[in-house]
Length: 450
Image 1 (cartoon, rainbow, N blue to C red):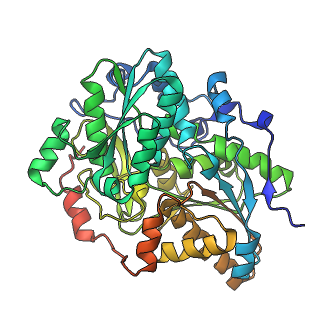
Image 2: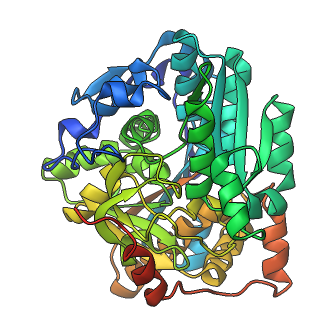
Image 3: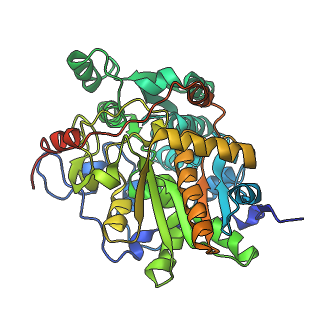
């Protein structure tokens, strides 16, 4: 029999997170205070984050211990399996070997609990009673609701309104784990009310939902804010994915030539790629490709500059590739990829040429998703389907060039709660949308100049 699943034992769960800042040739420029435009310090963040996470955000230590309480919960689903996609390879008639790390085995069905669990743990240790957060497609909100339930924290989730309507079962999963969910923009915050006054039909955006959650946390002493992507400590928590994958490749005496991940905020891509990028930084030949939607082309069309992480300008300025913080994306089904910017770590690595980026239209993405589901049997979430589109294109290129390459991607999230998106695609109700260059220029023209 061909080896399909590469499995690690529970005792092989990584006991440390990898911090790529210890090895990057260039660190991101520091976050700047939204008022003074000076580099922020720990005190500026302590109103919404516990000090333990603030320390993880800025440290340059290479390895950070994972608390035993976090490891105990990780063991519910970690280590996750690494699969060899034999059937997809055969369907493509490619000499490439395709592997995928399957994060859909987590209770919330995606990679997001890898950071939700430690964030809930550190907030509980700091005496926090409630977490306010945002969610796009609902994978992060579900994960934070799960983590809050496990650690006895109340959770309030501001869910992007278009996804709130598209994905009701994600909302129900959050409520099942005890969270309170509001469609964003909401009437519960000043940021939400202002957005609704300007446009009562505002479909929402991740940037706007972040504004609401940050405002909520900053105005309640017992509440902190939790972010599901973008920040350094979030990306670091996700490196358990790539660290496990490296061990699994050793078991089959292989190593990836190409690593592909979908990219909205960056945590999915960071989790699978950062441990391997350590090898690339040290001279190993390796390509890492970030895949994003053509309707939200942050890396491929955005500008590398300081911008707010949210619509209302409550967050620090971060050095990122950005489309402008007041960018309101179209309502594509890949709600987790509709963010105006990306992780400063991912952006710096891309800027330095250690990563590549591609953008795809959603029709081609769903075509790839169906091909994957009909060969490998797993129905992927629309976000991960972007990575699958990139994988198939690279595998077909290997076929054209007659090259035997090993391709790895992160399959984060099953699509069982995204079946309406599949129905819309198969019923011919979806269309492609290229975000206009003039709209990007207009949004960027409103940014402050440093």
